[in-house]
Every structure is written in C-alpha cells, then in structure tokens.
Length: 80
Figure 1 (cartoon, rainbow, N blue to C red):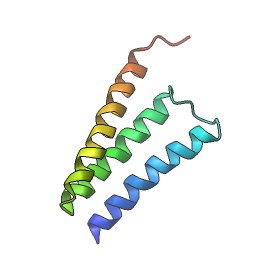
Figure 2 (cartoon, one colour; figure 1 turned 30 degrees about the horizontal axis):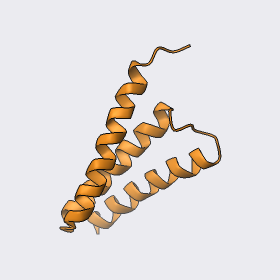
Figure 3 (cartoon, rainbow, N blue to C red; figure 1 turned 180 degrees about the vertical axis):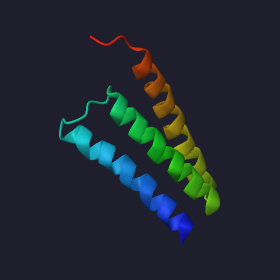
C-alpha cells in the first residue's frame, strides 16, 4: 500500500505542475514548476523501482534529471 501512495503522490505533483503551467499560473521557467516536477519525478522513480517497472524507472529518471538541471539553472539565474 505504501508503494501505491508514493506513486499517487508523484503523479499528483507532476499533474499539478502541468495544470498550473497550462493555466498560466506557473511558467515552465519558474522554480516552483521545476522543483515540483523534480520531486514528482523522483517519487515516480521510487515507485517504479518498487514495482520493478524498469522502463518507467528510465522514463521518470530522465524526467527527474532534466527537472533537477532546470531547478539548478533557475536558482542560479539572477533575479530582476
């Protein structure tokens, strides 16, 4: 049951970021968007690992690494 909750939490975070971006509340360049995608992706990697779904470990691993890269870039960007 714990593994299911991890998967639900990860999917919820990624969908939240997607919806807020589509509603123009968050831009894809915002730190909140990228960090939410990073945490959601990391949770989905963990979930996929727990259920031995290797293609989804790879898919969500790449998603998480890209979101991490973007989060770091956002934090380094000078604020106006």
